[in-house]
Amino acid sequence: MTIISAEKWKAVKIITIELRDAVENLQSTPTSLPTSEPAESQISITLAEADLPVVKLNGSPNIPAITYIALVYAGGQNTDSASQTVYWRLLKNGSSLSNGSFAVDANYYWTITARYFDVNAGDTIELRLWASSTNVNWDYDAYVCQYTRPFPYASGVVADLWIKTKDIIAHPTLTQGNPSVAKIEQYRLSSGLTHYADRYHLYDEQEHFERWSEYLMRVGGGDVYQGVVYNTDSSARPFYRCNYIPTKIIIRELK
Image: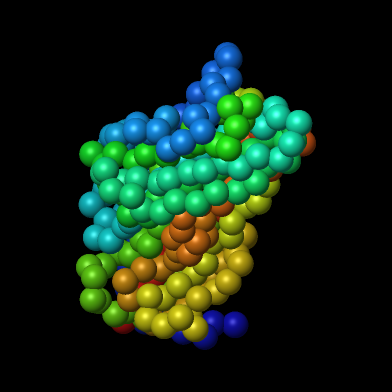
């Protein structure tokens, strides 16, 4: 049944997203973590344009509104005969964002998924690590950038839009070490106008008509949920988090 005739719609707009593969590093020999906070971070990455996903609106890279996030992973093992504590600190451009700790059982592997919101080329993001025993090591790290909060108009514009998310993928896929996915965070459609407009826990293609402003969707891990999460496992390292992400969004505006 046709609810609104075709002549009531403006031309189709299509947002396409090319996501990058994660950059991974697995050490041949694990490195013991220090027992106090180090002066320099073990993992420090200065992001380049080539690290960012390629987001286009109708084939042009000049989409009016887009935000980038970064996921940084680190993994290792507690080889001690007792439970130990891993401590972490996140930094961006030299400033501390947050810090915390978590316990790792004896002989268990650990993985940190650190999520940095609103990053751009030229930013330096860091993950600093230490532990309660030198028998806790790290030997794996990786990073990848994703997108969130796309919008086909400038900030402040309000429009009645039909949108459809397409080509949903789980991202990233890590391959080095003995990887296993701990959780895939689900994306949310979000109008940017009110909290109640969020469509929670989406992992497949969605079609929706609503009044929108500021952004069309938000990625789960890195936007809806920021900061650090950790996972421990008896065999998998990295035991990591990733996101369900649309790689195409089709948009029609009501005239």
